[in-house]
Amino acid sequence: MIQFFTQNSEIIIRLAVAVGLGMLIGAERLLVHKEAGMKTHALVSMGAAVFIIISEFLVIKYSSLSGFNPAMIAGNIIAGIGFLGAGSIIFHENKLQGITTASGIWVTAGIGMACGFGLFTLAIISTALVLIIFIVLNVIEKPIKRISEDNFKD
Image (cartoon, rainbow, N blue to C red; front, side, top):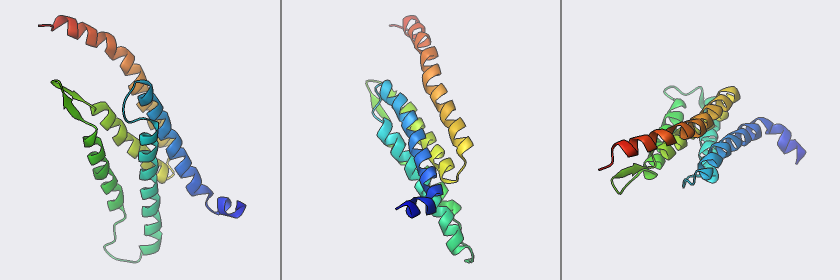
């Protein structure tokens, strides 16, 4: 069992960091009562990391084949996450809802991709910036929204 962990330590670390960072972003979403919380963001981040790790292994295994492009996997992650994000956007009572959640899911996939490539500094800085955007801008937006609602009432 110890041999398994030693031989696969790099993969375990990449996936664990992806899950942890996704959970941090999801925790903030959970605190503000959004549907896509810790589990969703952790799974999106880990899933993106898994596909990137697969693409790295494919490069090693099939590098001798001409026309093989493992970068297509990364590109398809972005497209696939777009469908997931689109599902979280709804139009309800003349208001568009879920755009921030969709954006959070999208950037969480990017963070997972960074973890999959082993770019931990990029992933951690990105996570910190996402949390700053979600937390700090939420605090700043509340009074602005109140002013806007007061000025534009029918």
